[in-house]
Image 1 (cartoon, helix red, strand yellow):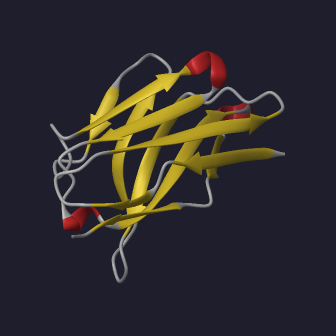
Image 2 (spheres, rainbow, N blue to C red; image 1 turned 45 degrees about the horizontal axis):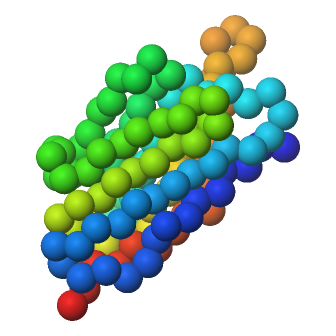
Length: 120
């Protein structure tokens, strides 16, 4: 019904850059918020960055100044530009999208995840 398809993950050296993309596909899909979360082995899934339909962004302190989230609302696509990558950024990155339905019910969608590995 609704799919989030991530791409752009891979192996990169410390200090390098990657750009993640997430395309939302499905009928009548208009999320009010999209973002990225990540989960490293043994850790909880944590918020990385989000962006609302109005363009408001939010970043985790650990990535602020290094990562930039952007959105193409017409294409229901969100991007995460990751610069100055560190080994601690190694994780599976998950795309997330939220939309509201009747009674302000929040629909929460997740991508399958894309692996980002930062290592020399």
